[in-house]
Length: 186
Image 1 (cartoon, helix red, strand yellow):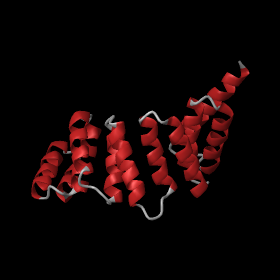
Image 2 (cartoon, one colour):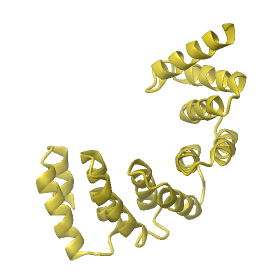
Image 3 (tube, helix red, strand yellow):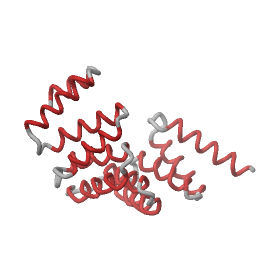
Image 4 (cartoon, rainbow, N blue to C red):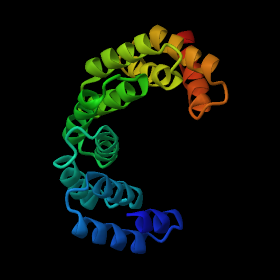
């Protein structure tokens, strides 16, 4: 597994995949190794193979929060919303203290499974836990805008920008705010 991670870091994806598969053959019950392989396959764009590996990891990851989180993220990106939701619910259940970051990942899985209302409620719960978790504000802004709740979305984009004016989603948040303001003028 360490060799696979090192090869992946060096962009030798063929060697990394071979090493991951060797590690899985030696320890078929290691959910994290299989999750890492699945994530690498998602990165390569091989979503079908990624789903196979991530689903295989899911069956072995009970109670392993880190593996379940990786699997849930990977399955969401591999377009397997039901699997992502299952993994994220497992990750939340495995955590003694649920965090805003974990709930945000759950909300993304809920949204991927077409449960916007559940995702909004989960993000609101995340912000009760940590009102300064900027990513939750950004995600909630997106989901509220998608639900037509533009004034509420505006408040969350603005709060995101207050917390992280140079954050990863700052330009996107500014663009969305501008679009909301432009739409209100019409």
